[in-house]
Length: 313
Image (cartoon, rainbow, N blue to C red; front, side, top):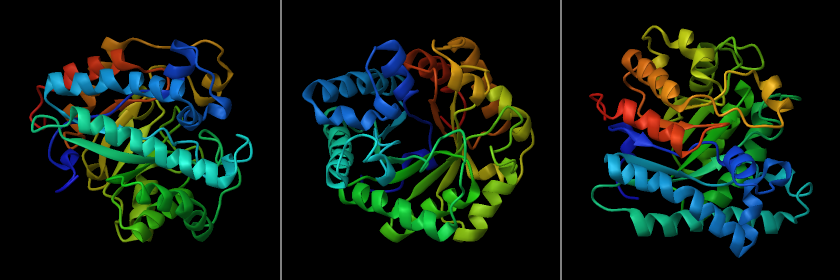
């Protein structure tokens, strides 16, 4: 797309919990939670298109912008072998994930609907457990591969989703700088509002900004219920102004509880919408609204309808 990212000046929606929706609501098997494998078949590509379309229709109906996030959260190099793929095959699936988004944008975009194509980058390991923490240099090198592949496919920006430690988030930001793309860094937090490493959200945002010269275009929070982080955002401060997006879970459960679940906890979409509205009343700079685990188009609809009347919409 040409020009500045629309989410910097207006309300923009994005999707919900892609993997949990496909797995629990639609009965589609996702090995290792990797939705990128769906790009390998016509049926899989059709399932992804069917997933994205209602969100685009919602954004068009409500007059917001929209961020199309690629199905590449679990598609960095370490996941090739577990998925039974050669690296070149996984790279090609990354490209095809972006190509699908470009086709959808060509179909839906217009003067009334600005659509951003974003390349999604996930953590090297588990989203909930930082495990062995890489050095910043190692993280930059590791994530640089996928960043280059997504950049070659023509994404407008990158989104680092479910970041659970500062070094990896910093490395991805530096990898984005190497390919000249804007990036949103989205941290996940535990029920106490802190990263799984114990770092506060404030310290994490400040550390990434300090290490990268403030390179991230903005920060986000994802894969946690608003009750888990609302208290952290109860005051307006310089660091909170860097947070422009929320992709919350439907469930109030902890990450450990979610990991053990065999059935989806879809929470209450209407209540979730009210909680987002309360967040935006305190932090009106938040302009990117979507969902994470357990959410689907019902939740994003409730969130959007609760928030579209706010001034920044």
